[in-house]
Structures are given as structure tokens and as C-alpha cells.
Amino acid sequence: MDILLLESRWPSLLKYLHKQGFRKSYIKLFSIEYSTMLQKLKAGLYLSLCDYQDKFIAHHSPTKTTWRRYAAVKKIVRYVLSGEYPITIERMAIEELPEEYQTLIRECIARDKEKGNSPKSQKNYEDSLKTFFIHLYKNGIQNLSEATENVVQSYFTCEGKIVRGYNTMMLIKRFLTLCDDCIDGITLEKIRSYLPCIKKKHKLYPALTDNEAQKIKDVLLKDDSGLSELTKAIGCLAFFTGLRTCDIVGLSIRDIDWKDKTIHVVQRKTRVPIHLSLDPVFANHIYRYITRERPQSGDSHIFIRKISRRPMDSHDAYKQCVKIMYKAGIRQVDARRGFHLFRHYLATKMIDNGSNLAIVSATLGHRDPRTTFDYLSSDYKQLKKCALSITNYIRDENY
Image (cartoon, rainbow, N blue to C red; front, top):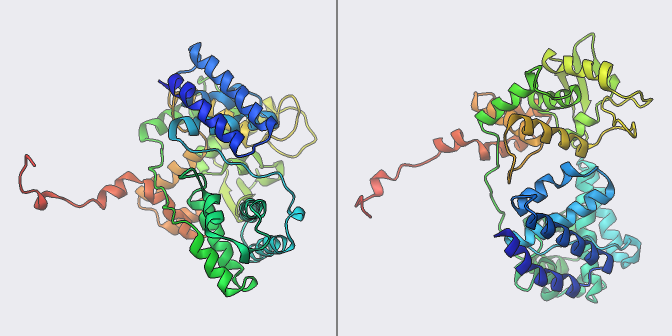
């Protein structure tokens, strides 16, 4: 079925790429990945498009070229399965934009930084505003006061289909609020009225089940599971502490106080410091990895690549998660994987066991405790408690 969908929808995707004016090299990349994907699916090497996408990273070394290819694969799969058109950030320097657009981008980034938000937040603003203003500029709009409804709307839609969603729309709205004194009132209200009404999509998070979590725990703790000390160390840190992947691979030797049995981490995403107990369940694996498997390196990071002897990144850690799930016999095909599932499971179990949200928030290192409420949305037991009986509304049992 996926092969037929891929073959039937590829011509329309190719036509869209040409129509939108994508670079020849970009279209060539899509064409190569399409051919490779089709060939391997026909050979029976993968069960489905999702299977191909899920296993792509695990079968390639984590280089910039790999992730560029993976981005193209994801966009092809997304279009074939759900009809979502691919979008890309235009390669155009901010300095090439009109002065007003440059000023607004820099002012927005500066004000967001003053609010104490993370560098990632400023990067999101920069990327979204840059592409928005490039779109206006390429359509002849030299400043915001000249913007028309059709041009603004076309940034979010193509041929009647939404190509940029709720998050992008909300970033533009928040920018207008953040920099409202930099834009005249009439223009401000005009742009706000032109923005489309895009509903936020709510999906059930593909959380780990208790059975899956137990299988993961078993392979992490068993001596004969076949996993390396590296894999066990990273896996145990993710499973038992809820640390983000970027913080795990960012750990350095000086972050661990073996005497006081603590780990001190300043989170990369939020810059919030957290202090964790050095539990033997993962401390032993870290120690054995350092003394037995870790390559000799002058770098202070704990987790080092074997060949390049440079610090591991999140993509390297993802491969370790794939290995763990493979050994555990779970999520082999068409399923979400990654260490964020471990973090999510820890949070929902704490909530399920009656832990105070403030404690859960402190454990996860959230800057804003309200962020923890996101984990309630996929806590099925809690959701069931909110269910209302419809018994009193049924008039006929055959209805």
C-alpha cells in the first residue's frame, strides 16, 4: 500500500517543489531519497514508509549529510501519508532584508532574551520571523504597513492546504505583542486580523506502557542483556533520572561528585541547575564505562565517540535508545522511540503515584511549574477520572 501511495503522490510533490521555486540541489536531494526509498521498499527491506523513516538514523552515521537526507525523508513521508507540503527556511541573510524587518527581528530577540527565555526561544523567533519577512519581501512588501491579507495568508497555506501550523502562527502573534510599541497601531491590528485561525492539534502522546517500561528496566539492569556499559549508562540516566538527552551527553567529569554522590547539571534548554543523587543503579555503569570502554581523550565530557574521540551528541544517544528497545523487544516498527519517552514515563508515574506537581517540576528541572501540566494530558488513569457517565442519557440501548 505504501509503495503505491509513494509512486502515485510523488509526481504532485515534485511539481510542488518546482512551483515553489526550490533550488535544483534541493529537488535533486528529494529525487534521490525518493528513488532510494522506493527501491528498498520494493526489495522488502522495510515494512512501510514509517519503518524506513524510523530506522534511517540507526543505519547511518550521524553526520550533517545524514541529517539533511533524513529531513528530506521525513518531508516525503509526511506528504505521502498525510498530504502535508514540505517547507524550508529560505537561505537569505537578515542583512538582505529591508531595514524595518531587520530592526524588528533584532528587537524581538533582544526582548525575549530580557525575559530570561532560553537561546532556543530566540532561535525560534529568528527563524519564524526571518521566513515570514522573506515571504513578504519576495511578494513586493517592503514594510509591514504594505502587507495584504492574501500575502499574509499565503505564508500559511498553499493550494488551500495549511503548510505552516499553529506554533508558527502563535510565534507571529507573540512577536506582535512583544514588539507592539515598535509598530504603529493601525498596522498592528491589520496584521493581527490577517493571521489565519489555525487550531492546535491535540494528539495522544505515544507514552510507554508499564509493560514496555518493565522490559526496558529489565534489559538495563541485567548483566547478560548484551548491552554495552555505554548504552546502559546513558539508558539508566534517562530512565531513572528523567534527564534530557542533551544534558546526558553534555555531562562532564566535573559534574559528578563521587564523594558526595551527587550530579550537578545546568540544563542546556532552560539553564536551570538541578542536583541529582548519584544512585548506584546508574553510577556503577558510568564508572565501568569510564574505566573500561571510554576512549582516551583530553575532552572532559563523559561520553566520547570511539573513532573521532569527540563528545557524543543527541543523535548518538538516540542510537543507544534504539539498541535498548531492540533488546527489550519493543517498538520495532512504526512507533516513536527516543529518550524523551523515558522522561515522560518518569513524570507520569510520579503524578500517578500522587507526587506533588511542584516536586515533579523540580525533579524534571522545569523553569515554569506550569510546564508539568503537559504531562497530565497523556496520563490515561487521570484522564479516565475526568470521564462522565452517559448512562442517564441513553434512552434506548439499541440506539
